[in-house]
Image 1 (cartoon, rainbow, N blue to C red):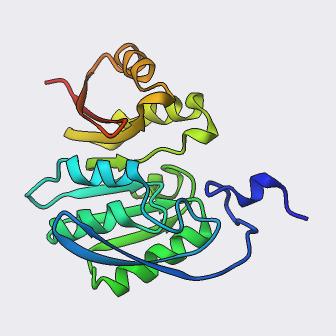
Image 2 (cartoon, rainbow, N blue to C red):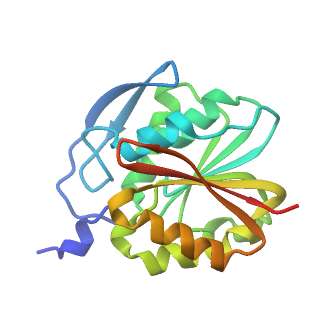
Image 3 (cartoon, one colour):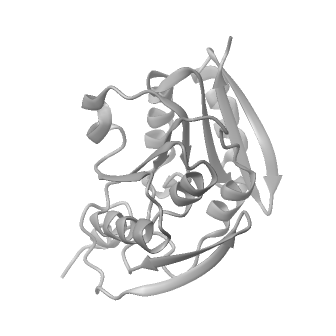
Length: 209
């Protein structure tokens, strides 16, 4: 019998029974179709936090390297790729099922500028020496706020000098406290809450000039 942890969307190999679902969603004026499966975050519909981030996230217009960290089956990364076809989008997730879905979804939605990579946080791309113009995530806070804050602490090392970090958090998951902690932890970055919608806060961080 598998443990509950093996069925979490942030586990490497979820043990939930394998079924394939298909969902469709209009995001920023384009229709997307996604293959999903149990063991992947929000497998039956795109969660409200992700949709809120997608709606309000800032996307560079110029050629960029962008990262969707913890991509799941790919909605954030695929929207980034669609909205800026001249950029390269890196989509990273530890969950092998999520990566399989994301790869399938790049094909289904005819996206050619997104790369899917299996691994934990920055580990699979550290050796490539890539700096990003933008990093985006709907973080897995069920893993704990301390782990998320450690991840945030590493963000400046992976951004270009004018790069930005955007993420979404449910207000009731301690968004205000995280805002205050990030201001203390990252003194060389501007920490803003750009939008508050439907119980979610959309954060925008950028290196100070």
